[in-house]
Image (cartoon, rainbow, N blue to C red):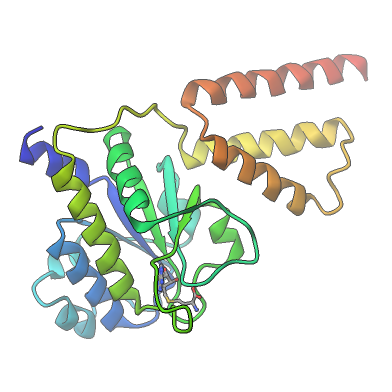
Length: 249
Ligand code: SAH
């Protein structure tokens, strides 16, 4: 693969900052990204409004990343076209979710960015990722640290992840893994709504409360990583079940 192809592909790796509060951190992330050739920055409901002087100062020459950053009101809007979502977290979570090392995450992001946009999520400086944000993730990554002091600065975490992507990019030129076309987030959301609808049609006892069952199902399907074709098959089955229920009632 030519270097230019590889840069094009790397454009599909999106670093998503959720509710960042400090302009300096946003600038620091832009700098971290640019040093490693990652270009696509997305901010979700930032308290920092761009352009911001402090952010530009901390970007130190990487302000082009800030000027081209996308801003979204909510996370779903920021990742709806992504088929792989990986979340970064400083702490062990109370909800159990598949884990990866930074190196494994970089490899997955790199390999799968060939088929379209993929996202790496970073949580808010003080609170990290909230549970509904974790539920959007196929995997979580924790950068190994001193167990007694595990919380890195946002820009430092972004730097380490961007560096891992950079290493992967240079070690994998010409040796990409073959990966299927996975369904994107928007299609998965439509599928979850459809599934919930069918479970209700069937009087399936999901209301205890439904959010718990749906979280388990989302975790299952995130683990399975449905291809576009598999998702179509499941949607077809759900529709057939609905038609069958409608005929009987
Ligand atoms: N108390 C928060 C810390 C937030 S630090 C928490 O426990 O998650 C801000 C963000 O930086 C985190 O949400 C995460 O995206 C990233 N980060 C910080 N330390 C990290 C680590 N050791 N591994 C992976 N990501 C980390």
